[in-house]
Image (cartoon, rainbow, N blue to C red; front, side, top):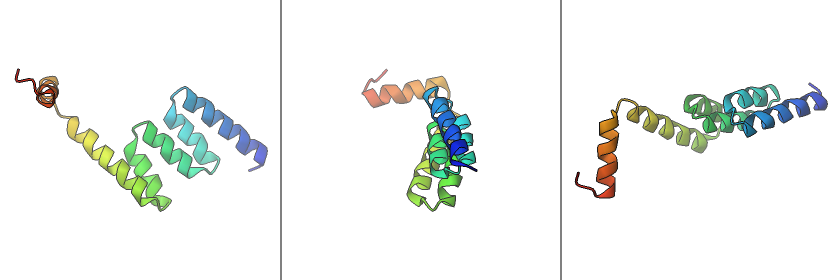
Length: 97
């Protein structure tokens, strides 16, 4: 792959990121051979499983652990009802109601 083609892929990825289309941008980063940037884009998109796997592949264990923690936290909130979340919020604020 030539420098010109890589430049086009990176420009497209940056454009997609500016539109907050992070998963699409990650695909372009992977095509350009920039896996760390792809993993960061996956993390921005809250695709923590993909980001974790890519960070692990790159040997970035700290980044992978951060993504794993975010993934676990987001999945633990998934089964909560609106009332549960509202109750937690009120408890955090010290509101007894």
